Length: 143
Image (tube, rainbow, N blue to C red; front, side):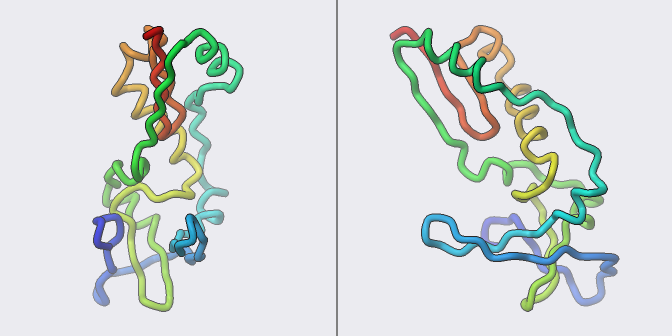
């Protein structure tokens, strides 16, 4: 909630349905994650192209210098519409919450994020000096 990713749903707000939360561990820290598997069964897959491994390896093999950047909390950079927020409500022993930003675990989150990154860097991608794999950015150069 401190990061503006979640907000608590008020007691007077109508809640049609919620998803459960599960606790996962990452780098020795617990993390609350929405369990969106039920929602995923009703989600139409987004077929946006994510780079294939062999294409990426071919591009990397031509570079002398490689720099990699991991986008911090990448999915959380995307603000959700009010309609999407209602579909992404979760419930726990502390109450009902809704995501204000794209959470991890949504079926189409990786392809949506990939498309967003491809839109931001079209020139660099077409020149072959940049590889983007979801929230990982690889810069390839000869110097």
